Structure formats: C-alpha cells, structure tokens
Image (cartoon, rainbow, N blue to C red; front, side):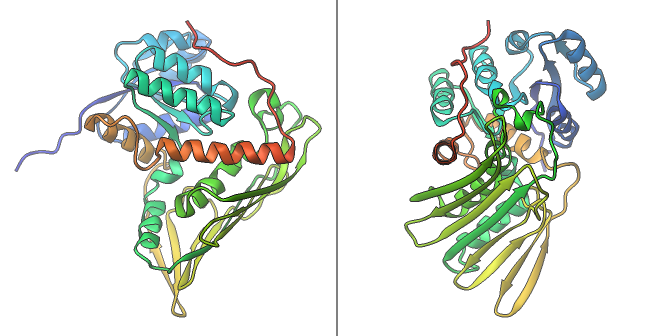
Length: 336
C-alpha cells in the first residue's frame, strides 16, 4: 500500500476581516494547506492577523502579497467593491485566485477577471462555498438522478435582522452594499445549480436612503416551465431556508441552507432525513476544491464553473437594473 500524501499548497489571504478570519480558521482542516502569508493595506493589521492565525509572513500591501514567491494561491477576502482590483493585482503577480462572492459588482468586470486568468494560464474561482458543501453536492446528485422527478420550483430566502447603521458596508453603495449582492447570491446560486440560467427575470425591491436594496424579491422563469421564487433582505431575519420541488417529491434544506449539514427528502408520503455533518465552518470544502484543481492542473473548478459565475452576474445585473441600484465606481486597475 502507498500512502496518499496531499501536495502542499501555500495559501495567502488578502484581507483581514471577519470572513478572512473564518476562512483561516478552516484552512488547517484541509490536508496539504499551508498558511503562508497574509496581505493588508496596513502592515500592523497584517502582522496581527498573521500572529493570530499562524501565518508565516505578513505584508503591508496587496502588491507585496501578490509578489510573494512562497504563495501559490490567494484568497481575496476584501469587500465587494475591491474584489476586482484585488484579484487583478494577484493575477498580475502570477497567483491563482479564489475570490469572495460576488466576484465583482457586475458581469463585465467578472468577465475581465476571467479573461485575465485565461490569458495568464492561472486558476480563478469565485468563492461560492455553498456549491462545494457536501450536503448541497449530494442534493444536486439526487436531483440529477431523478429522485424528485422533474424540478418545478425552487424557493429560497436569506434575510438578516439588522438594523444596520447608514455607514455599515451593507448600506454603503461605495462598498457594493445591498441585499442582492451580499445575500441574494445564495438563493440565485441554488436556483442556478438546479435549473441553470433563467429565461425570465422579474425583480422588485425597497431601497435604503443610500440607494441600495433593503428588501428584494426575484421571480425567475425557465424554459422547462419551472419557476424560482427568491427573496433577500437586510431588514428582517427570515427563515433562511430553501426547498426544491419536483413532480415526484421535494427536498427541504434547513435554515442556513447555504451551509447545510442535513436535508430532508419528501417522496411517496415519507420523509427521509440525510445527515451530512462536518467540523469547522464549512469553508474548508472550497479550499479543498481549489487545491484539487491546482494539483490536477485545472484552471477552473467544475463545482463553481466560471460560466456559472457569469450567468449569475448577468441575472444580478438585470435585477439591479429593474430595482434601480447602481454603483458609480471608477474602473479599477491592478495595483503596482
């Protein structure tokens, strides 16, 4: 017998906020993951983060992290509005990139990142961790195998209670605020995973005084005749659950459907619960998928394909156009 030894992948993290900390906490759960370096716009912040989470090196600029020859892949964990420039900086430095969702603020800039990665022969993946979750993967497999027949409807909601102050990132248009980009991407990704790109998109929202969406509904129609009814909001805690209905049954995902450890299949008058437990917060699965792809020499992941990122960004562009949310930002360029 030969021992299965995972290749070492040296991780850098760009950003030092809450999501960066959670991702860093889950990295040790991934065989072969090395906590190599962290980068921030402030050296003291990067140093404190590196000490707290066990990273070998700290950099006081994004460009320094991108130039670190001892880093294989960078996880971009900055606010939405800076994803584009941060990812461009890392790609320019020759690094593979796992970029937090949404990849950028619109389809055009996401397409630019993807083209840059392809031109440079570098791996790029949106950090839609839900698609890598083992329960979600099992649900998708059951549906593909016909467990609930032809899918007719997807229902999903994601709402936070708040209240959020006017200066909070979720209400700040300069940071890509609003419910749709931050929360709505999860219901949209679930619907896309099961039904693909929609034929029709209808959306309505209530906006905050700052001009970002506070409470948003999306109704998607598909060529198959299926529908997806999706909601997201930052003004009330919803159940944050989801269901997928088919001609032969239904699958229910529990609250926090985007990181489930169980689900229920209803069919023939019976309900069967599937338990899929795991340690940590659930970010380790996207990190493991990145490492698998890098070891195999793949430039994108079949679990989070770049085409899916672009199709969902197109839907979000349509939603924002219908509800009247726009982000007046200068086109970013890679940092030197």
